[in-house]
Length: 141
Image (cartoon, rainbow, N blue to C red):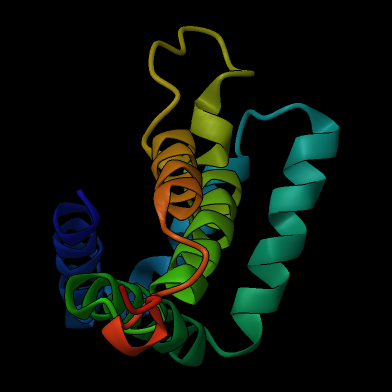
């Protein structure tokens, strides 16, 4: 399950590296605030203001994080850290990139993928062993 989730994150990351995404991130976040209740529109607008400082850097950081999460989960290197970052990043994407799934707008039918990514990240994190035991640590019989 961890590897499949890593492949999904890796696909997200690879798609985020497309040139069109580097120019559309700011507009995407702005579009998510349209029609939202005032407090949510203000929150999403604050995120848009941060991205507007340097949208190319923001998109590169997003693409790099998604790619790194995917590679980490596939290779099982720093997986616990990657799953924590995955949950946080998925929540941020759900808020700023998906506008809370538009659930506070008329006609909303789908909460989008953000909550599912958070849930899978936390479930995989909980399922991972706390420590990796090597043979040399096991008691001799």
